[in-house]
Length: 244
Image (cartoon, rainbow, N blue to C red):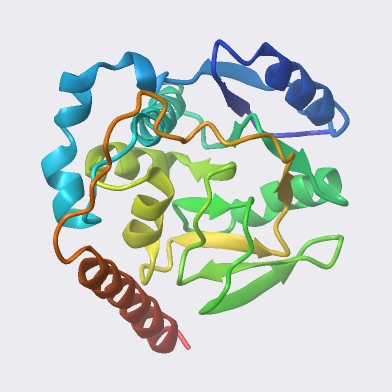
């Protein structure tokens, strides 16, 4: 069974999650290459403070060590994709789980994306709105443009062009899934599957504060969050309508 290059993000302190994910993925012919996750708690306060001003201005609070580490882990995967000049690659987090018919649908997805111009496919969460289906996978899942790009980074499918753009344009001022939603919504360069192609294992999240770092909210946090969400939704709606 032909499958894409696959990178699995995993913390050094979680070998059991690596074993479980690797065993599950082997069922559909995927042999993941482990990418050591960045341990946010080991970055040190100075490295974390470097992102405070941007995060306070963007989301109204500081980022937790886990959020910074998660973002940097996805940057590391994009760097590998670009360095190896891979046309496409699958990036998974180690709490990912298979959904029904994942294997056959993933093979079909490889054929379909070759005819589409895109940056990133979110395979871990279905789109909630402003989605336009373009093709059907063997299971009946729909693949289409996600004008409002879903959050969650458990299962991402990158194009080479998308990985390059991400490295050139990313800014650690929000959790990585929030950045990707803002970055791609309204552009038509984000795709998704409905229902999602991968699920979650139920393992505990590693995005907690970890070091006990205070994540005090800035004054006007709620208003800032609502404005940011409204802006992303407006761009998504405009893109969806224009391409109607």
